[in-house]
Image (cartoon, rainbow, N blue to C red):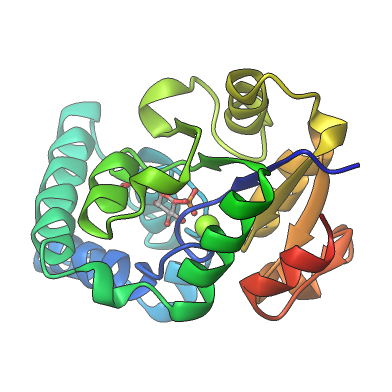
Length: 210
Ligand code: B16
Ligand code: MG
């Protein structure tokens, strides 16, 4: 029986893809580094630092650690300023309604995200109150497809992985969920991934799995 659900943030609860894209573009293009939608697709669920590594590899560019750290800082400043335009009205009604229903059913809920901006985003969207635990990029050593983020969330919920759904939009997140022994649910791009246990088209479909 499913007792808990661990949600990925970007691409599941909220949709910040376009903001990440705009911020990376503004951070790297002035340096002569190319960045397009195809590369952006490869960054889903990947940490900020690893995202930059992917962008640099695509461009055959190598940079010293300090330069890379500076670029990541600039990207995040731009990204955070874009996040400031988000409000509770940006949460899809299907998402908010699903969280309300799950709270009523007494299912324990957590967020498991690679993003170091998770808590900031949840506050801006007025979603913090729905979750019993939040594990973000600040709290883990290994990024997805390592299951650390989800294992930590299950531990905070005091549940076994096999009693929890992991809902993800990224292939790396589904791999992380499966590696941790969770029941995986894929939405968006992850709905078409062969290793996804339960593909869904909209978040409210998780209500049929609890
Ligand atoms: P930040 P998720 C991930 O969040 C995003 O999908 C990914 O594109 C981003 O690079 C990563 O967070 C790090 O985000 O720069 O805010 O720390 O999908 O795991 O919720
Ligand atoms: Mg995601």
